[in-house]
Amino acid sequence: MDINLIRENIEYEQLLGENTADTVVKEEYVIPDTHPDVREILMLDVKALINSKEIIQDKVYLEGQIQYNVLYMTKDQERTDMENVIYSSKFSNTIDIMGAKPEMLCDAECFVEHMECRVINERKICLEGILKLKSEVYKNFNFEIVKDIEAVKDVQYLKNPTSIDKVITNFNGELIGKANIKIPMEKPEIGKVIKYDVNIHKKEVKLYEGKISINAFACINMIYKGTDSRELIYIEQEVMLNKELDFEDVNPYMDNYTDFRVDAIDFDIKEDDLGEKRIIDVEFLIKTNTRAMHKEEVDMIEDIYSPTTNLEMDKKDYVLNVMQGQLLTETLVKGDIELDSNMAKPSKVIMCNASVSVTDKKVIEDKVIIEGIMNVTVLYRSDDEEKYLSAVSEEIPFTCGAEILGTKINMSSVCKLSLENINADIEAGNISVRAIVKVYVRVNYMVEKKFLVDVYPVEGELPKKTASITIYVVQSGDTLWKIAKKYNTTMQEVVRVNQIEDPNVIKVSQKLIIPGRIII
Image 1 (tube, rainbow, N blue to C red):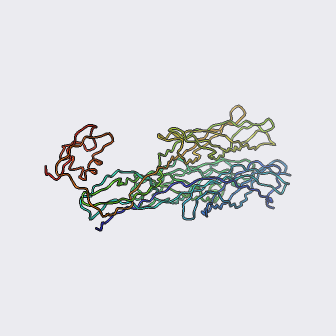
Image 2: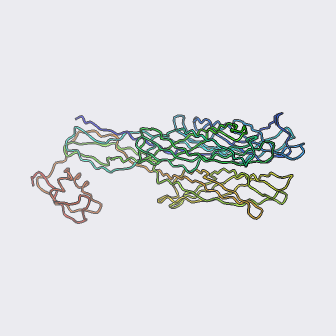
Image 3: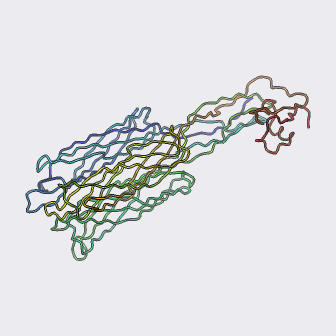
């Protein structure tokens, strides 16, 4: 006898593995002829960006670019002054992740773990340090299960709904931000922009039917040097960003996490109506990557039989990835930077720059403990004429917790950090730093489940029903399903004959009438 199986395709994704690799950077650069000689390095601002990622067998190959902005004090002038010079270099490295294959998906990010600049001579500098690269590889699974059967009379199912975590895909988007910054008359005219950044914060991402709504604020901060002046002026301006992206596979019931990355910044200095350089037009590109996840309820057939046909079942074991939970929270990071006695005393903080990265993570009962480092650089003004500008850097370690109920020690986690905002103040001759750090945590675990993958009729004589009714005494561990299958009848018949109100509730020692060939 032919039967028609109705199948359902199950697709899901699980974290295959994650790993890190250190990339050693060492470059020597000559100061351009247009710039004065170097006396000492004031500070080094480094930005590292991954441009491409590729999975090869058991490895992830990453390529990227580093931009160095070197601020230095000049030599051989009547009085000390500050200059800056920008260089760039490329990097590449591989991260070992066993089992990685080209068809899999991966995420990657990089952090500047340590970078310093030293003077070789007045026309040459050396940049050296370590980049930490991190990658996560996700494996796709695809298999079919039997959902229903046609062309078999009186098929009885025991179904148990199970939830499967599915990652629909990664949705990429772009946001373009623009700003027109006007320098007030009480500040000096723009001579040269020394440093510029865009920090994305106050992020809000919502999913709708077929749409992703992205809202955020971009804080543009710049340092410029006044015309015919050695003064450094810090300016900042916030720009609201919002955009709706169309993706038909998205719905509001999905969980999500979105990465924001500043991909490009351009600016143009213009003159105002008085002919003074007091206007800066800024344009920047933000790339977003939204990872949408949802739990799909699948009616899984655990058991099947027919009172009129002998059926055989094939089941297979599959290991599924289950998301226990995810959390987006904030933590306060603070620390004091003590200045050496040979350093100039601060009178005014010009700028505070920082980056955050995860150094360790640990899953415990109902919680994930994250350890991180905030690398801070503070540029400040001093009343000392010779040392009127100074910079100090510090690594501030911090620990925070993310409470996710149900987490266990044997589960795995994914953690990401981003800087929301930072402030630096002068307190008792030292510098006090306070920052808000966004913390994203996702906890997963693996579970093994059996799925019905095939059903087929087999030859053989069906069990014969007794000529009369049977009285069955319920034993420990019995269910109506087991009893009906044992006596080759249906649950509906047993429920009807015994006038059972709730088929899920039967008691040990309860007596049940099992119908035979006699019609009751």
